[in-house]
Image 1 (cartoon, rainbow, N blue to C red):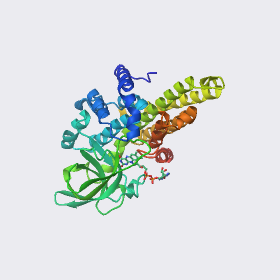
Image 2: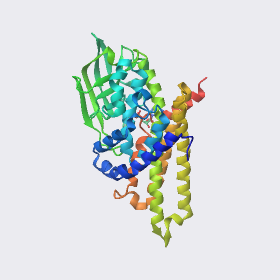
Image 3: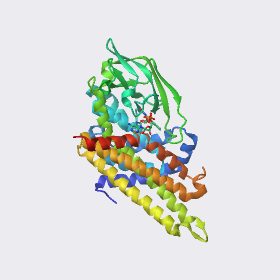
Image 4: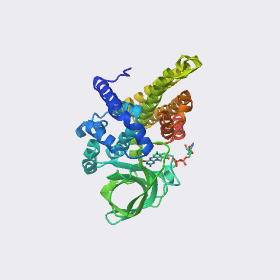
Length: 381
Ligand SMILES: Cc1cc2nc3c(=O)[nH]c(=O)nc-3n(C[C@H](O)[C@H](O)[C@H](O)COP(=O)(O)OP(=O)(O)OC[C@H]3O[C@@H](n4cnc5c(N)ncnc54)[C@H](O)[C@@H]3O)c2cc1C
């Protein structure tokens, strides 16, 4: 189905689908099993020029969130971790585009777009994930800039990143308005990457604790005017939230692909499992869920691309993220069920989809938080 994709987007879909099948699918199980960073997949995405997709045309991109969603979906259909490489590149990009000065954009965006630079984005701390206002990391004013002190957890890509976009409070106050984002480059004295998290899903892209001990950043490394950076960057994240939904659609489609192929070949009580009506109805419900999720994700992406902003974008983006990732969890759970005991075995691919789907309901704002956003905007006067 086209969903109003233009010719370029359909060509992109065909190309990425083919490359994903021919060059990515065969690597997915090994990346998940070893938990090692897939540098070969990073190089492939770079060679294909896929990192540039959502960047504005002056950086060689299409400027289209919808195009980026199409690519993520096709890669995520066969390998969650390779699709994650795209997301990890695009989250800091959104922050720099939204809040960066011309100098910051010149310094970081071309490298992010062509894959010469890698980045990470860090808000979460041990005592506060959803409750962003509870972060303790502080950037205190000093001569020429700030000194950052504090610690973060779950910073994905930290060990590979050339720079990290870090949330820290300025001033003495404790409100979200006092949160600002700073660009901290690798090798800055006092910036240390700590322990790698052992994860059940998203295993190929590392998440680390990071520490800041009197880390000096100049004024020019702050994103946006002091006190406004938080709002600017969080609004930018609304625009990139459909990408997480697209990764969920891809994951769900991949789980359904595997389930269909399995039940057609598996026999029980003298006939193909696919011939049982109870099984067929499960497959149909999985397909319905996926199509509904895809429609909502593409709609949210199109909204971001056509300049919808503020609460309207926040609501549709939250709906897309929440619905698509819940759908992915449901579809992956049903797919494991259809595999029977093989669904539990590591000899088959399907439990990987199940483990990765769970991650999607938690990252980039848990699905409860997405529901809070939707309800708040419903009730607001
Ligand atoms: C694989 C992975 C990669 C990650 N990468 C990054 C990264 O690169 N950078 C980064 O900053 N963070 C990252 N995170 C962290 C992630 O953003 C947080 O885990 C997430 O925001 C939830 O925070 P928490 O884990 O502290 O849960 P908590 O906020 O402690 O929530 C615990 C539970 O309570 C629920 N809850 C909390 N508040 C409410 C409420 N008001 N209403 C209803 N329910 C509520 C939550 O939904 C959840 O179910 C990553 C996490 C994972 C798993």
